[in-house]
Image 1 (cartoon, rainbow, N blue to C red):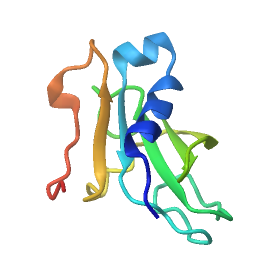
Image 2 (cartoon, one colour):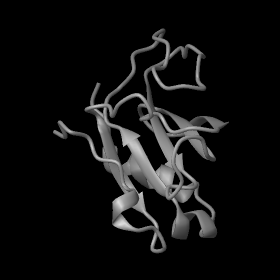
Image 3 (cartoon, helix red, strand yellow):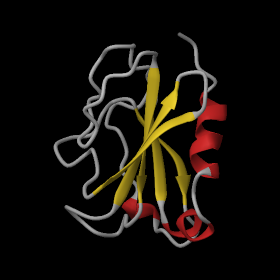
Image 4 (cartoon, rainbow, N blue to C red):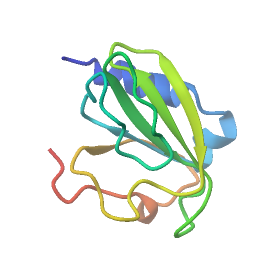
Length: 120
C-alpha cells in the first residue's frame, strides 16, 4: 500500500501542543504495518483491522532511558486511530531501519535525535 508520508507526518506534527512543538522530537516508522499484525513497538499490543503506520513523539529527548513519550497509530490513509502514553522510546534495544525524523523542536539540540544506521 502506498502512503502519503508527507500527509501522515503533518498529522503527527499537528497533534503536538505548542510546547511539544518546541521541545519534542517526532519520528515516523516509514513502513505500513498490515492489518492483523501485532505492532512492533513497546506499549502497543492491539491488532488493527486495517493497515496502520506508527509514530513516536519523544517528549523529553534530552533524557536517557525511561522518560515521557507518546506513540500514535495512524491509518495508512491518514487519521490518528490511537494515542498511547509511554515511559520509554522504541529504540532502547536498537534503532529500526524504518525510523525517520519528521520534527525536531527549536529548543531541542541536534545530538538528541536518534538516526537509523540504515536509513533509506
